[in-house]
Length: 213
Image 1 (cartoon, one colour):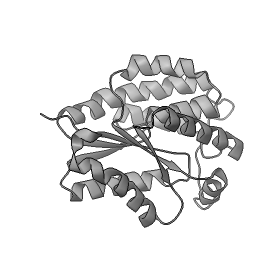
Image 2 (spheres, rainbow, N blue to C red):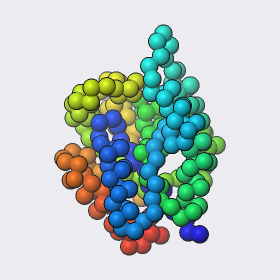
Image 3 (cartoon, rainbow, N blue to C red):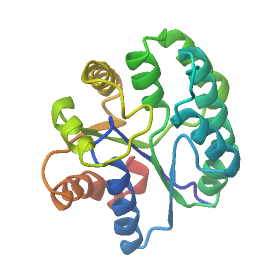
């Protein structure tokens, strides 16, 4: 059976990633594409339990950057083996809210971990399974921060300062330059409909020829 397409949405907190990922799934279904939505960290029961640990603040002790990194890849391995890869093998498209580019941005850029360590873990966990297309939703950190203030509740990543998110954004920009055929920058300012239209315009050529991704 034909292999499905693996599409990831990336970006810092407050850029509208999760909303756009689900909107994209609905749009792809309307085009006759069989697709599932998933997210990272998470996506399977075990990986969702790790997500809850990673996003929660623990009184008196926080995750060390390397511990955080290892948990991210533990969740990713479960996610890949139990959900993403089986779906792709069945010919189903997968739209994933974040993947390993987020690890380079958050744990590499934000936390300051050596990218060579991240690369080694990436090689062990999914050397031969990369996204076909990555949509990087980009927004100035100060605007994203303003959006976060309206949410009311926040997790331990959302509570990071703007300096942290400036480092995250810098790594996303670096990776977009490194992998221009895979990573497409999507301006995330404007209404949800305007951003969705930019995403759809980016994907439309690939729907005409799925092998082009």
